[in-house]
Image (tube, rainbow, N blue to C red; front, side):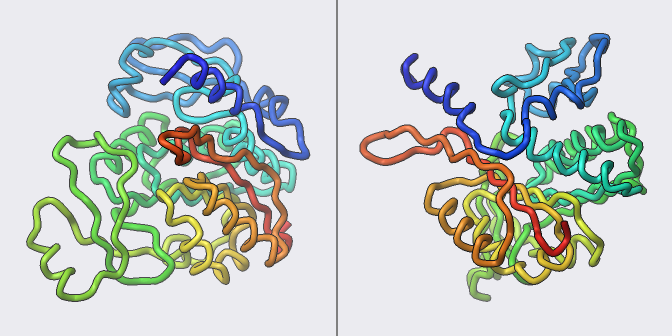
Length: 304
């Protein structure tokens, strides 16, 4: 990547739109005067992370305290941080006692843990629900949640795939554990293919979890979706459940096509967009190539 392209990508992280002060919101959650801790990365919220989560990036950061992201840190930018933290601030402002987040494709438990730490600092009890297809990432999520003091009554992690309906999906098994962050499932394959996959060590067959199965019908303050291009299929297939239970949905988008589909879907249902930063996709051989996911935050008017 040329220096010019890298500079443009960094500058594009500031190209978000919202109707609240995103940077002031981040600053309001900063935990001041944190002490560095050997072998641990601490972020501005006070969340503790081990280098094992992402060794190639985090090993050199061990023993440091990260500042407020400006325009981003190693995994998210102002737009995504502010969109997520807005849901915590509003839960507190509305006098809730419990903050609930469901994270689809939760990886190492990034948004579960960070929003759990932020909500706990605001005096809220938490219910942290995640689903992930990669066993190594799922164990990392469990480890990080426990490292930050969350007990088994405060979180639930599911080994599976988020889908628009019940059924089965084929999910890859990677030769190097935890090395892949963008695996895509094959949803609802024919029975013959499913049977062959059961015998193939390169893949695993997992249950698909629609939203109702994850949330058990409880209200959700934040539904975080990062499922590698299947975002529209998921929200379309779970539209009724989302209308009933989800106050806000934060989506990491993986193409401009998907971004347009999501806008058409939510606007047609009367949802309100509260944050938007398009996917950053420089041109490579005449095609846009996603370097950083886009961000959309949508608010459910029925539950505001």
